[in-house]
Length: 62
Image (cartoon, rainbow, N blue to C red; front, side):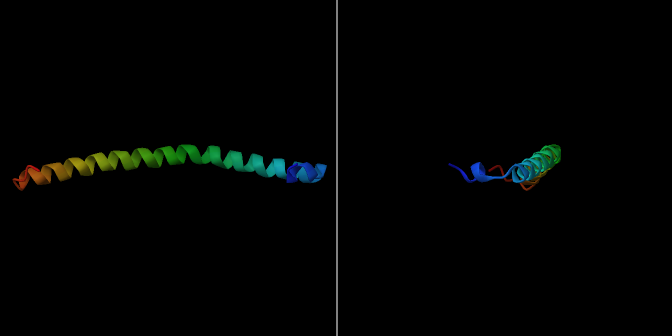
């Protein structure tokens, strides 16, 4: 048996509401996280290109 088996009806409703709030917050965070990840990827590509160009200007072909 799990501890949830001993919840009263009122406590079960309280837990369900908290779980629903958590799920909603997680869904709201997903697009923000995706936007952050896309921005980081875009900026990394730009910086990698600049780094590659800087190496080429210095005559280093490593």
